[in-house]
Image 1: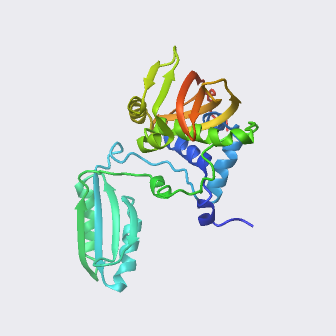
Image 2 (image 1 turned 30 degrees about the vertical axis):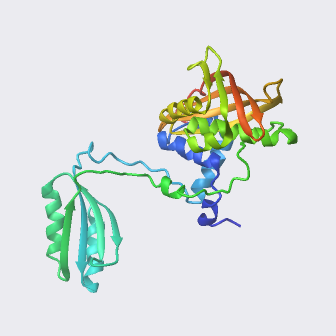
Length: 314
């Protein structure tokens, strides 16, 4: 039995979110490239996308740049009309190629619509046709002077966590994570995520006051940062550099004192929408109780993307 779209919406997980973010940057990505950026196979990426489309959660459309196409006169229209005239108004608006959206609304007006015209003259033709219609009591036209927000809607979908997270660890398939190391790996993963996202309250919650973070050369930003204030400074820099970051654990092993474990991760980072890179990172962590006392970044290496397959590559 097929699940209803609203049921599937509540099951959008982190991989789905990452896939959607990639498609926002370039909806024409080949499945092989998409899978490489997500750390999965091209077939998995294809199946995920097909599932979202079949559930009508995600739609791929070709949308014009209205201004670049010469449609420089954008308006918001409101119509107040007698009941018998509403359907006729809708027919007139629907028949116009310049009307982008029509809504039945509540309150003082009965209809709202948005439209984009190549000129004021073209707009005037539609306005006069509506004004001359018997039963139209009031027609108000507002010119759009400036678009201050034009969101694609996913921020609203993701305004609340869609899937309760039972663990802060995202582990790659096939990775062996010993049970006795899971609590510390969870803390290490949460600490790294907080650092990269610039989540200062979380950094303070997870770190000792004398925490030491060392980045080994030849990595960018190599150096030793001693104390919570210095680590927070590095977190602020990271926050300014990335929009979103995803960490996937691919290996864990115990380490020699003063460190407790070494964690290998694949980190996928988005600096600006559509500019995503994946890197391998190896870090050693030392703990004091349930807080991070020292972190050593041993190595980091950018991973090359899969080449585009070209037309028909999917």
